[in-house]
Length: 417
Ligand code: FAD
Ligand code: A2P
Image (tube, rainbow, N blue to C red; front, side, top):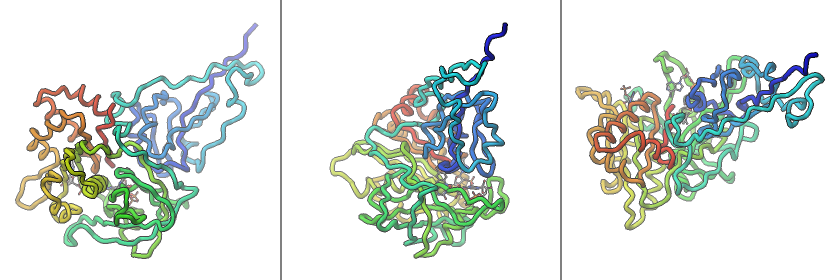
């Protein structure tokens, strides 16, 4: 006589398309390539995902943290997930405790629990998944796709020289009476108007906040962004980026639809003796500007915290905020610029300048108060981590141990796109 047919239940990992801001963080973080996307949705391959949770803490919105109990044989395929505008509800027949009978003649096997993986400080992720210990507590997801807010453009001007190809704008958005509390290092989502050729509303694009917590203009309920007009795709082919062109073309008085704020780890330490080692290219300077300005406004007498900045751009004329940056006192911030396309000069990347300042960088690496921030071009991330490793090892520091410690202690923050 045959016994009941065993039925396997899967705790299927899914991404909520209504909250997801398509920032690609999960796909990059997943150590086993279980996450992929099309032009619409980010999805999880049920047959590959092992529930390791590496992708969960870095997700800026929490869209990643969704699970449905399904019969393994009926797991949602990625093609099905691509068509979703919202997540399916939990099917009642498999949501009950697994001891409950599922179907006549069927025996349930327990839902597999996600393995207990300590993500922070593990090899699965390259940067911290926890904030610095002294960071202020951020608000996240106050405004969502379903309930966004509106901001008014109160400023929009070009930061880069008109004669250059790089068109980077400083845009100030005012929230009026709507509360929009932010911290340096956080980002917001912009919902561009219009729809894709397939008739779906455009998804939100994420932009780092370039102003400190008390506003671009102190005491005002506003934030600034640093937005680069995308005119070429990553392959160099001509294209008009939907949201960046929309933002760069906005006029004073226009309104924009905003969601967020996002981000609960890429935050600055609040203790006055903490050091900031900031490494960025192009618009990756936005969070560095926010942190630097916060420190400048709150410069405390006697505080020993240092600010060291490494900033890369094609030329001086294409480096956002060049003038204001040069006006900051040398005893307040140690600024190091790397230009890659200055006529008649050798190509220099931030990594090259880090090497030139290796002795001072090593000093900071040895100090438990140092917090490292890397933001900007995706391509620089590997190079910067390799250079930090080189510098550490030349100065008698074990990079593997230091890297683990930096990650675990919320002192290594990477945001590249
Ligand atoms: P899309 O219409 O989405 O894309 C058009 C084409 O260009 C596509 O082929 C796409 O693959 C390609 N493409 C997309 N982005 C780029 C790019 N940066 N360079 C070259 N090709 C690209 N951008 C800022 O300007 N300032 C910021 O402070 C900023 N912060 C960000 C923070 C985070 C965490 C993330 C994930 C992204 C951030 N971005 C920032 C990038 C921003 O979210 C958009 O991706 C970017 O503005 C392009 O959007 P788009 O709608 O104009 O282009
Ligand atoms: P490049 O002249 O090779 O493009 P962008 O203007 O595209 O936002 O880039 C900002 C700066 O980052 C440019 O100087 C660019 O140099 C530089 N860059 C490009 N690739 C890397 C990389 N892998 N590591 C560090 N910097 C890079």
